[in-house]
Length: 97
Picture 1: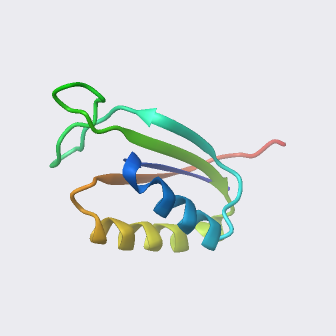
Picture 2: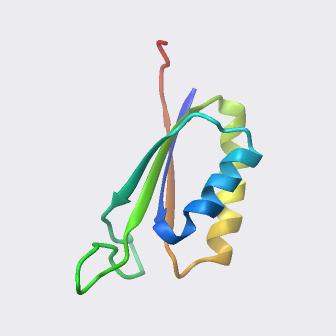
């Protein structure tokens, strides 16, 4: 099992949700308002007067076979929306339930 963590500009939420549906990634936890700034480029998303944009983050625990299709889809979305900002990370996890 893998944990897939995605953080992105909240304006992209519908697009990310559609991608998850298309890949049959049903179970996830959504954090609707998260702050952050990119590692290399992009403006901070802090929900403040100076930096008003906000992020949304999702974590989904998925079978290993779903990771690469999800990452490919996320790369394609990121390529189309580079100015919005998105990062995705994958961790090994053990599912007990």
